[in-house]
Image (cartoon, rainbow, N blue to C red; front, top):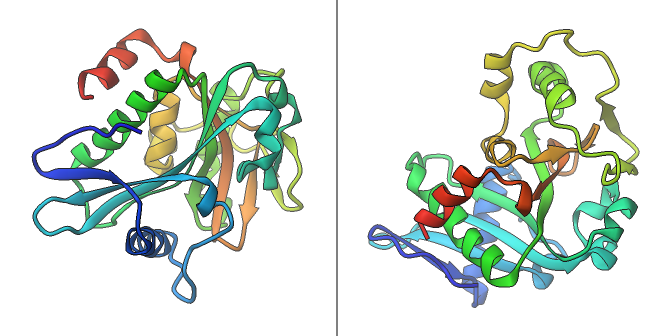
Amino acid sequence: MTVAAHPRYRVKKAKTDSDMAAAQALRSLCFKLSKRTDADAFDVKCIHLLIEDRTTKELLCCFRAMPLVGAEIAQSYSAQFYDLSRLAAFDGPMLELGRFCIAPHCKDPDVLRLAWATLTRYVDTQAVRILFGCSSFDGTDTTAYLDAFALLKARHLAPAHWMPQVKAPDVIRFSTPFRSRPDLKEAMRVMPPLLRSYLVMGGWVSDHAVVDRDMNTLHVFTGVEVAAIPAARQRSLRAIT
């Protein structure tokens, strides 16, 4: 995966045990896992990208990516929680994104822009046709997210032929009435930043959220079909690569 350049930040692939340890520590911090390190069997199957401060060497952002094709989708992290059998028929290269974390104190938007720039290069060079993964809301209490869920239901559900089916034992179905008219400002305020980015690119979500008590999150399956990304957005992503 070719990485983008920036005068203040460095983007690199994790290659050493210390690289992986730093990524897992940042993930543990972001997911508030105080009693254990965030590591799983999928780590060895993925490409891991790290963004660090060139001067201090501090890790500011990390994420992992797993290249797949439709027939392999049952091997993905997301398939633990969602029945993705409909997406098994998807024709073309896929990329599962996961564990996307930015250090809580990092407020520079260039960090997120660099992450997307690097991903854009990979998508272009590998002819990836769909990005997918689990987009997480912090905590498992739905109260704060009712407007967000109502907005996802009203405007951003997956097309029926790709719609993930329920697999996890504990889910929040969007067929449950939340808000007859979601408060758009409130919905976007509580929408996770990564999910907001996906939605701007024309992304879609499952018709339910999974309650993941192990990670203390609510998450929705999210897909972005590359061909459906608005032309202006595609130009802006390529402009920073």
